[in-house]
Image 1 (cartoon, rainbow, N blue to C red):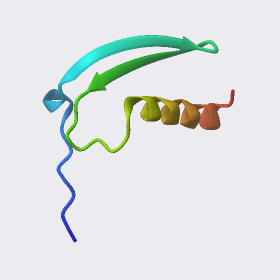
Image 2: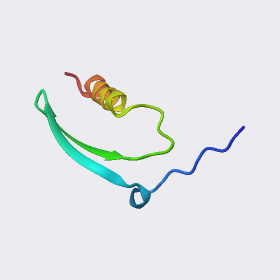
Image 3: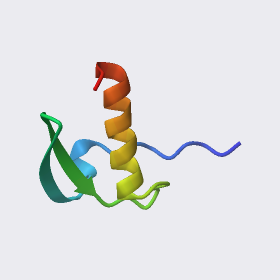
Length: 59
């Protein structure tokens, strides 16, 4: 079993863009950062985050 990679602290992550969106009255601030360990696309991640928020808080 391989050890999990160490998580980077906020100071170690290089944020490359910050965008603000409003969807159905909910304000989202999205910070994009580069990661060599990413397993999903930005589009997939944002869709997942929004879906999780809807499931948690309702539409």
